[in-house]
Length: 239
Image 1 (cartoon, rainbow, N blue to C red):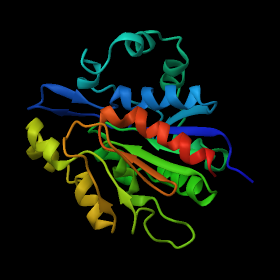
Image 2 (image 1 turned 30 degrees about the horizontal axis):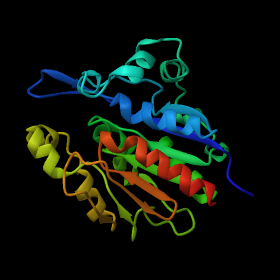
Image 3 (image 1 turned 180 degrees about the vertical axis):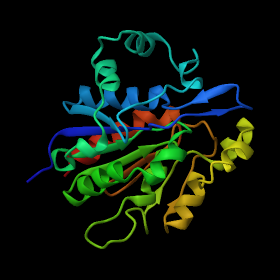
Image 4 (image 1 turned 90 degrees about the horizontal axis):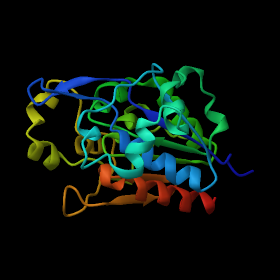
């Protein structure tokens, strides 16, 4: 039986300051909004959940370069479907992973803080994959894979597979690598190596780029959120 045409977008619950304490990082809005729009347009029922049921919007993601036009209007409309679901998220512990055919880990730098130990979100992702669904992430979303396993083998889900995510070069370019190191979490490239995955990236750190490896779909950065979701739909349609 084909997996349910229903998707869960994971949201980071964490928040922290970056740029010497000047700005707040949390959910990178477009990394959840863009896949939400793509999946809804493709006929999916889409829900959102975080480990604690809460979220903090990332400062950078609210700047005009990243949030404008229709996206800004949706964000500002507290009665939009996206905002209602985001502002009233359940805790991941209360979510039944068997009801979903797609798991999509959105991110923001804050995901490096809570995703590695977000056991309930990780459980959902593992269940979706075990039930024949599609598991995906974007940008810092691969931090979730720290505890996502292939239930058939007990091995890390991404072991032996190809993934992408935010580059270490981009962290250095943004001038925040030293601050990120204080969080004691591996960068995406490092996590891939630790878990036995092959990390791939585009030539440019801001290029729209995603990788499909079977039922695992990953995107490199905020610019890749929509194309990653479209690739998810393509994979799902072939299940």
